[in-house]
Image (cartoon, rainbow, N blue to C red; front, side, top):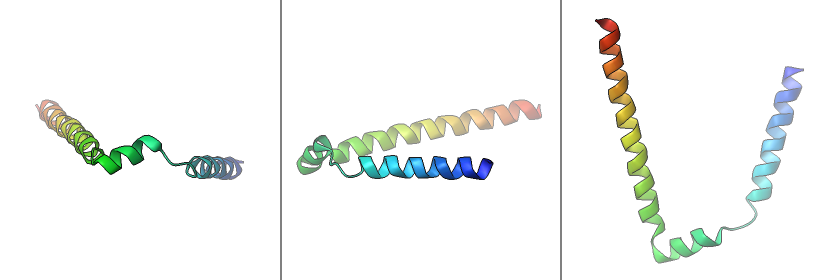
Amino acid sequence: MKVKLTLISIVLCLITVLSYGQSGVEMADVMRSNGKIYVVVAVVTIIMLGILVYLITIDRKLTSIEKS
């Protein structure tokens, strides 16, 4: 039962991805041609790195509190 449900979920996800993957995104094409897509990628990367550093510092603080 669980295997069937998992297989059905995987098939539905693949169908969804394949159906949306056929159409191009016009905004991304325009931004790529203007070179602005790299700015967007850089900003998203910086934000994600900031969140990662913040989570690591919180984890270190919590482990030091737990030890004491």
